[in-house]
Structures are given as structure tokens and as C-alpha cells.
Amino acid sequence: TLAVLPIFIFSFLAQKQLISGLTFGAVKG
Image 1 (cartoon, helix red, strand yellow):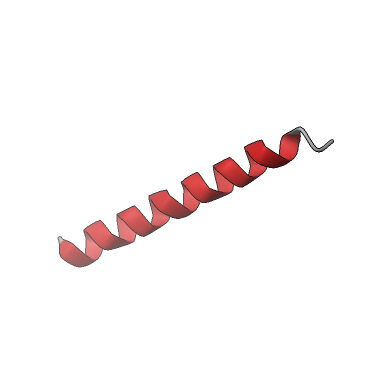
Image 2: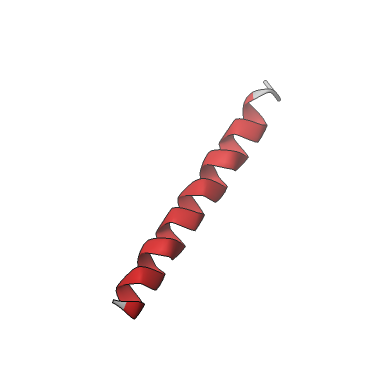
């Protein structure tokens, strides 16, 4: 259903933010 779509998008964006944050930390660290 369409109700799952916002949850999927949110989790996808959150995962992307997490990965980019970890990558940024690894590069800076």
C-alpha cells in the first residue's frame, strides 16, 4: 500500500545519512 512508501523513503534517507556520516567520520578521523 501507499502507506508504506513514506516509511520506506524515511528509512532509506536515514540509512543514507548514517552511511555518509560514518564515511565522513572515517575520512576525518
